[in-house]
Length: 537
Image (cartoon, rainbow, N blue to C red; front, side, top):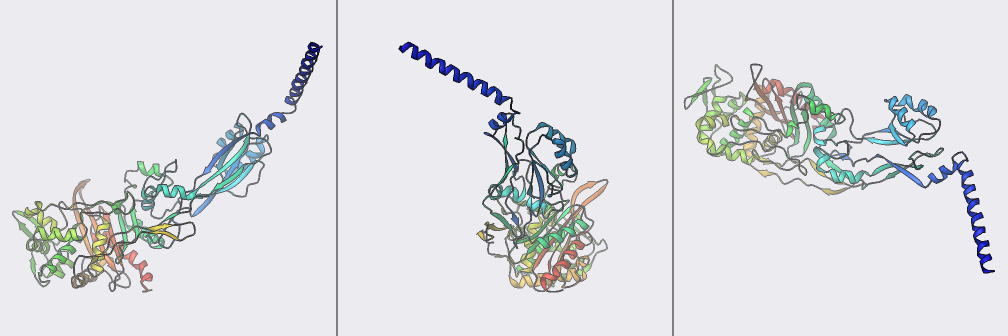
């Protein structure tokens, strides 16, 4: 009896199992619905974008992510012809679009319109990191294809900017082969980041017209605008520029556009004569001291010549600076001696540098040694800002700021602080207190010397339309020769306006002809724009 019951249970179980097999067979033939039902347990996620945190100017105006573009998130449907015909007019690579639709797997593609309507298509707006006419590309820097900061502020604050932006993803229901299920659209998710951003000292408007002036007159070189009291860098332009959207082209370009020339060291030339004047006045050498410039001078058997070969005649210190007389300053350098000239140069910040952002440092330049200053020809060269001496536009901006700021030397500052998602500063990087490098009285005399240089001297091409200015030209011999011609570097460094100066403006032109004619017009155009900031227009 017990045995027959066991057989009956086994028979019943066999019948039930057979019925299940038959049911599964018919379900598998039911137009693929069973397969789709199984597929609902699978999902596929696409990372559409990982927006980075914002970089702002000093007035909290964005310098990146200023525009957006539409992205089509596509779930390929059974009727790919309809999807293709709808999307194709808005897609640049139509053949790739068709291929991806035929593969049946979810994808996204940039489109030229945000108003596309089609089954299985969702439109997502994503930020465009860089515009085609970028503001301060060398300062901002760029990211690579993985979204990692490679240069500039993008590299210096890479972790913060990554965490700040969050991610945009799209999730799809897919079958076992990774194909989207029919009739379903993507689920778009935006995960917010911290919302933090980096605030720079750059002023977006000043940066824009500084770039315009530099691009108009310079083939290669740099222009810097600095607040003379705080040392804040308000504008920094390096020419040639590069497109952050096409870095590959910049890498292969012959003129090295990725180099930040504002952070690079150059032969300075006669702009350095300002430093000699400061040391001379401090050393009680009267500004009325005269030198008879005959056009040349013998320094231990080596002949140094003035740019005016016939000579300037008898000049005092102000005239010597205004005319940029080499003979006057070689004579002055001999009186001062190498140690004193080196001391003032170091006090003004030449030969040293400061980190403006994590890992972001301008060149320290090059100063000659005290031992080299014992060589008469080396001392003569250094007195003219030549020889074994190089400086950056940032360093020169600080020197001009000290002249314009009553003898107080500011430290350069590029990053103002960190801002939170609410627009409030969470960290402020205060600038350091300016250091006194010479007296207010010396500053006043130097200012007048430089104003005279612009009014009647070599700096006349830099004279603004309104407000006046003080400045110094420089044409430095590099020793390089190209196509049989000597290559010089032309400078104009000055302050604006002439009275109660607020801005230091520094311009260097690689392979320039002369400081006044090659760099002066850039200074003038920038100063003319700054007139309204000073209430002069």
